[in-house]
Length: 170
Image (cartoon, rainbow, N blue to C red; front, side, top):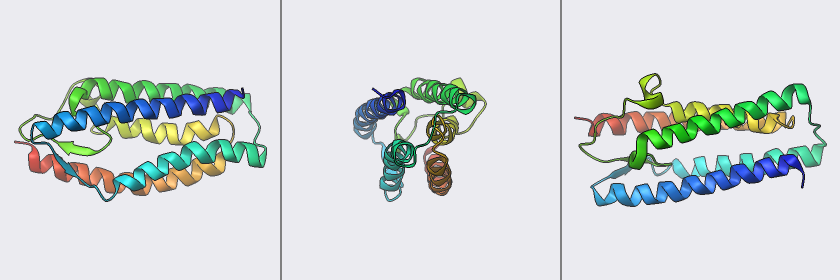
């Protein structure tokens, strides 16, 4: 199997694991009065992430993008570090973590783990991965397109999240 296809496959499995955790946490939050915000933008986020995972290997295959070790290995390290940061966020937020914006009234904001230093550390992981994953195999068109789309989506997402947290934080 092509190593890049294997990497993409592993990231797909990671995304599926995220969705399992998110679904479980959504049920937990709803059972405690959790309120979801920003439903309209969520399908666009899903579409962008699916497009990233389809477009990167498609660009490599269709346009014959080479693996350049001087670029590929550092970008692979960024992908691995982004996964580590993502799962540090998941672990730190516990049941409050979700792929959706869901706030359980009365729960305090989390201020430990990576949240000690960053307001939205998971989005740092998303940005880093969105650039690095395609560049592991020089799929620069995908990296650029996802980065632009992701910037627009994260602008909306962070505004929604900030408003939701402001409404629900004591």
